Length: 70
Image 1 (tube, rainbow, N blue to C red):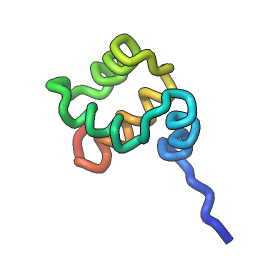
Image 2 (cartoon, rainbow, N blue to C red):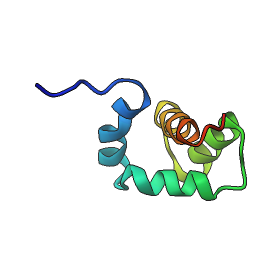
Image 3 (spheres, helix red, strand yellow):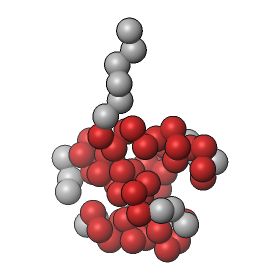
Image 4 (cartoon, one colour):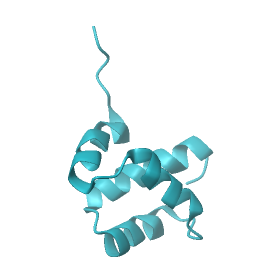
């Protein structure tokens, strides 16, 4: 029985399908950004990379959570 993915990671398959980049690549961009605040990063992904709000928010939340940042 496969485990149901919940939280931000549940968006990952649709992010990869819609934007054509693997999640790891988006996370690398987030980590390399000089921005550090959650909403600054979300706004940056939306304006500079054309992501929708929910997708950008999920990527930022997941990436910052694994680094212990927020």
